[in-house]
Image 1 (cartoon, rainbow, N blue to C red):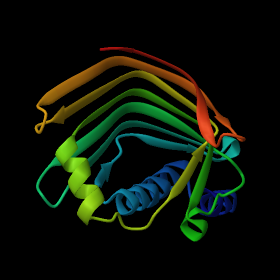
Image 2: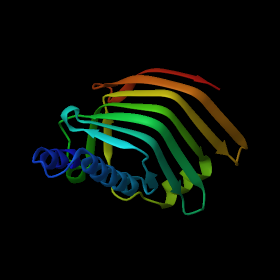
Image 3: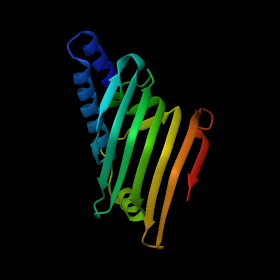
Length: 178
């Protein structure tokens, strides 16, 4: 819906490309913040209406649970190719991406954050996301568990997968350094 409405306005000559980029960036950032109950910030942001593609740099998502524990996700660059079906996630609660590419994502979190969040907090509105093809390049995951105690880090995470309709999951390969 966001992209379709923007395309109509852009085609009508009412908005230039930079205004469309800003409008979609703000709308998408707000929708993600609401669904994730987190702060969402994009750096540069570009919409290619003719290709149904969104490209961004420097995405930061920060969430704080009610117990004060935090999680953060930063992505240096990304590209999302939207599918024509389910273009109205605000109405349906579903979003389908033909592909999602994430360059240098870094997730930092801990067990206490996720336990508290699952037990006592609900994100704003739910969003069902289907990704037909997912590619993650040079990712990092840092996870801590103070109860065990355990700290782990995965570097150079590479993931390339395709949606398997029968299994209803992404099938593919994962490479990483521990």
